[in-house]
View 1 (cartoon, rainbow, N blue to C red):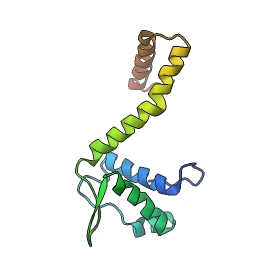
View 2: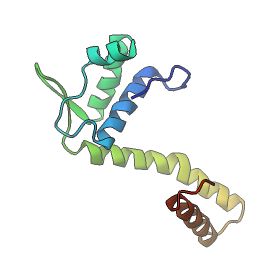
View 3: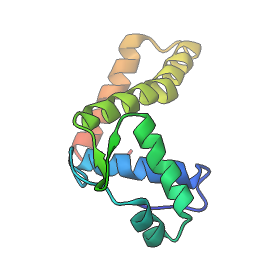
Length: 129
């Protein structure tokens, strides 16, 4: 997890996204403990209230839960829930604008799919484009 003070996202959001990334990567497997607010605030030298705000964001989304006296744990099914959330965001942030622009440029769905497939092939061959 990395905190970037130049990032326009608030630090608590960066904390939440960093933990989500850790859940997706397997660094924080489902039904295991995540670092405490004290551990996060000490590691990144941030206010504990900021760390707590990031963790509470994940609790409100159902990705983590509290075990009284033991800490915060990753919810069973969290990987699937996070992927769904991020897929929805991907569609609204990237796919919808892509389609709107393709329509403005008279790029047919066939042409658009061909462009995407070519770029995916390049990526599969580790080529930069």
